[in-house]
Length: 186
Image (cartoon, rainbow, N blue to C red; front, side):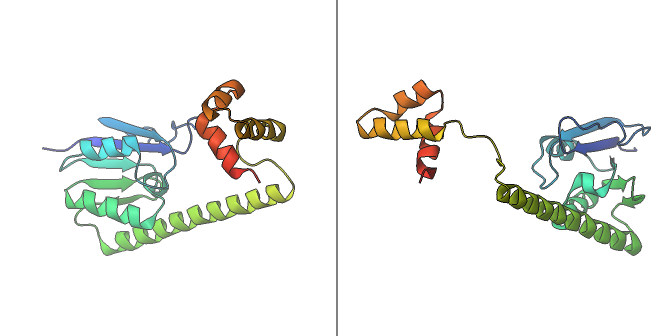
């Protein structure tokens, strides 16, 4: 008995389009994640892995859609092929099964290493961009929920005996936000 053709599709954000991935490939089941590929803790990837059975064929658009870490990639591919599941990466035109040839394995490891390197370069550029923006005095992350004036008022009122819970409610923030802002204040 032949297994199912199962597709795994991943994009990094909700507003990205998945249409180009595995377009034109006839699939029995498809699992689609809208989140980062930095680790394997993705709901639809987990569901896909639970769904797969011996003899199934997993289709993935490209290596970086399955994993960004070489270690995660190797682990996933080895676990699947050990279970008798083959994996096809369409962009790279590579297929892995329990009897994968040595050249495919070498290509796989090289492509995985490139995907991991690319991920580390993205993180480095992101850190550099954040540092440059901070240097220019730009706001990074969410804007503070309270102004410095409001925070000073709250500190004064806390010193006079008022409760954090009541003040948080009055200023429209959670107690945790108030606690965090008070801890971070100079």
